[in-house]
Length: 377
Image (cartoon, rainbow, N blue to C red; front, side, top):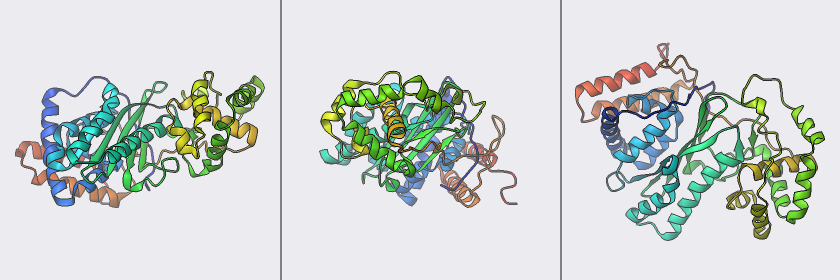
């Protein structure tokens, strides 16, 4: 992505009222009908994997453009509006406990689409790895609580998932598209949108982390007792003090907790024993092992750097953002060409939708407010 700036996605409680969700679902179905007929199912999920288009789509459906709820509500609305039989797309998973149903949702979609067991297994793995990467391999203070997996009848897929930070009450959204994923552990995202760029964040899927990934795998293949001694030795106060000196002075409430640089207090040694027995060939295999989470990833990364000098990337991987105003302010994206294209497609879809003129005018007004006043200047 080639867009820069900042987006504010504050955490909002509650849920959209039923009178709104009914209308949102109706309009979402109309737009999906038109777009899928005109461009195809693959293009529709491709658009959803573009955070600017996704944000504009939420605005057309009459939801707040910048709230964290736009992610959960829009994907939830799509899950109810899109039919695998009619549209050739299934929306799996969702928010909270619903996200845990993603594997069964994928299996059900696979049966409707006539997928082989191997294809269903692969899609389930893809869903799992997307969540693993954003919850463990990238550590910027966000815990995943929403995971939506969209799959077409041709087994193309996209992921829209979101994490929250309790420290500053903000959210971060992660977009994936199967066409753009050549390696799950090397720059796999289509885009990431968040409210702030952390000065320091562990990013084990950056290209610059290749040596650290290899060192982590080598460490994990060592006998568990030897690895335990290495991690315990690097967790001593003297070493930890040297890590703290790397941090720049900052007012970021999350950064002040030193979450990314602290050696984990609790590491699941049973998990590392399983990893040792498994003997992974690469970092993706290591990350895929059940039980390997943020603590294991961070522990191995810090040992790789402190003991072997193989530094991971500490660069926050946020790739997409908006400039912003107030709660109902107008986002101002930098990429005007992409903005114009997205707006035109949504405008045309709304105008062709078989809904009342009042709903059309309301949606087009929301879309107009989403576009900067000086966009054509």
